[in-house]
Amino acid sequence: MHEWSLAEAVLKSSIREATKRNIKKLTEIKIVLGELQGIEKDIVKFGLDNLKKGTIAQEAKFIFLKEKATFQCRNCHNVWELEEVDLGNYSLKESIHFVPEVVHSFIRCPQCGSRDFEVVKGRGIYIDEISGEDSE
Amino acid sequence: MIDPREVIVREKFAAIKCIIPVVSGKGGVGKSVISTALSLALAEQYKTGLLDLDFWGASDHVLLNTKNHFPEEEKGILPEEVRGVRFMSVAYYTQGKPLPIRGREYTDAFLELMAVTRWDDIEFLVLDMPPGMADPFLDLLQYIRNGNFLIITTPSRVSINVVTKIIEIIREQDLKIIGLIENMCTSKNKSKSISNLIESYKVKYLGYVPYYYHFDDHLDTLSDFVSTDFFQKIMTLMPYFKNYNS
Image (cartoon, each protein chain N blue to C red):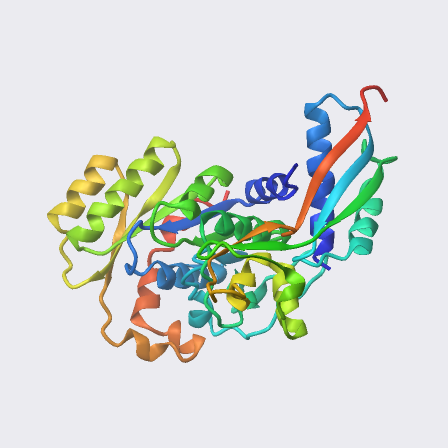
């Protein structure tokens, strides 16, 4: 359940950002989950709901947005999506789940075979937006 | 867009008593074997972690003879414990395949591993760094402000030339250097180049490690590794490190 660590990171970063913006109470945190990392939304939400207690995010609502994984080859410029390649067995998906960059160990550009490609979108987790109020 | 990992990575590094990035600038000078041996030696007295940050040429897992399975998860990733060393490497996830990644991807993998790895109450964290001054070294300077650098060089002027430059950057950043180890020595006498280097930059010379011709014959098991003269030599350097545990 390394999603717990990611939930902790999301919450701490949101609170830090809120403090910078002088937000006293967080009302909404929009979180993007990239397809490549395959993070379990429910586990992240469970972590956030537990960790937010007693913080300025106590009453915050978490909105989750999914982002499709898109790749672009740096060699031939071909663009493709994750569903177009076969990641094979469960253990490869697990490896990518922990460290998405290891995708370069397992897949190659479907057009030219190069491993030198960029994950253009949908890599992992990030905070898209935070909203709140400037008084408690 | 906010990257949630950055805050937590800085926090995690800041909470560790002593971080020892093992650097050189030059490849092939023995950073990995010294990082591994140093971790094993420290683990005899302290809670110690070892993080292999050489993603392109990860090799500490070979020296530690780790099992090829995913580390356990419990509110994060628990490093595998090998002879007292809590060990983490990208090698657990590449399944023996090459990892051809560019700089930005290196930084992402570095942040990911650090954000999810639970080092808990370790006193020492040894970082085995790749050669060069590209993204891994720059990430180190960006995210770890409490590092105590260990410099490795061979007696070769070619190595010393590159090492001088990395020391210059560390000094510019006002970061601490524990000292320098001269590795793979065929003579007990310090060369003029080494003497000039340590004098110019006021770097402590921790000692020399001889070149062991049959070192590779002792990598089959960990008990074989720790019985080598090489490991015993690293053990003699322990007094230099104990003051950093506070």
